[in-house]
Length: 126
Length: 384
Image 1 (cartoon, rainbow over the protein chains, first blue to last red):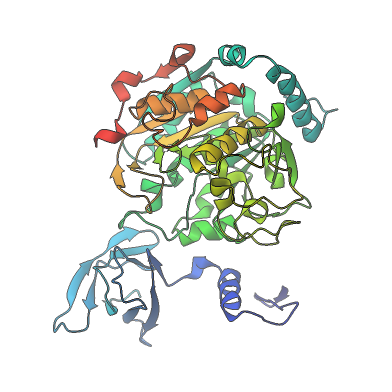
Image 2: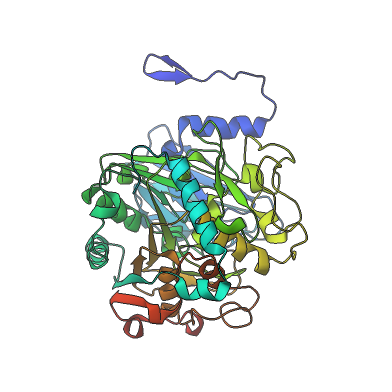
């Protein structure tokens, strides 16, 4: 680790062998304190968070890689939000999901995820 | 507890030698001679500021912590089983299967108030060498809360060598039930006072998991894990503690060997014996059990028949066998029960084995229960 200005640079002593381990190590170097989203009981799901340039809308997409639905998945977001709109394939209207405060952010308990869902957040503090 | 002329290593070795001579006596005498103890029981409805008051009262009932911790380094083994992303349904782990952060913070605060010089929070997170703080963050805990609870608080992941230069060896007094000794992270030697901070739970393999079973997790998976090398410890922990369950492979040869290589390959036989060995080799000075909220049906969200429960209980004592005996009674079980009787349907009793090693008594007639009486506080885990 080298201190440079207000940050640090990590230099590997050996060549990278395992891309997954590189991702894990990088995540730890940055610290989980800076996570934007986390999944609990993720099973075979993973997620991707994106935000509009004005920081007024955020979309978190959750993809299930298994043929089995993922149950009791909680999505944690690092900011406060009362509710989110949940979009699922095959449904015309969004489902409103209520948030539960989980400092410093919010927990959203998701219904069973068969293949894909997306949570849409709107607000001034995203 | 120690003189300045005696190192911790020598002190522990001396304790082992003394206890070894003691163990040469007949078993029946040992069972009767196990030290009697006092255990405090408190009721607490929620994980709020009231936890500090409840625990403080209990420590006072035990005679205060000053004599135990003043000027000392205190190591606390937390109970953070499984991975940080596991939840029972949508419920955070501190409510169901981990000791709650409020109880940890309250304990740290009260230890410091009693004069503890340094407080070290220890756990062996599953299959990782990541800092304990990062493991906590993944569960959405804030490690800074613990740092602010006392002046000198440290964290260490003890599932590998960690910050030590070598593993510390703990010999089991009397030769051990499963292994003659255990190699552990240095943190378990580099402390004056050892605290087990556990959760009040049932356990699929060994019936219950309280202050003693919490210490199963002090063993590093670099030596005792499914993927440990044959000769030397690995750099990183690989797999869980399957070998202690199935006895299907030996720990790395650098560690002390098993007492009986042909011991039954039955988790209900081996796991209670490993736990009894560990609490005899690495004595617990203060046992604290969080039963304000918990779960029934097993030790984690992966257990069958699991359910969130709210016993509203806190338990503390200076003897781990006596403390667990009171815990068992509060859960609706008979602490004198053994294999074939609930909660030990498929395992031997860890309490009986630890009692036979001279660690303490499980006989409620020899334990002074302070605070809320058992009959008034009992929460039957099998009737919820």
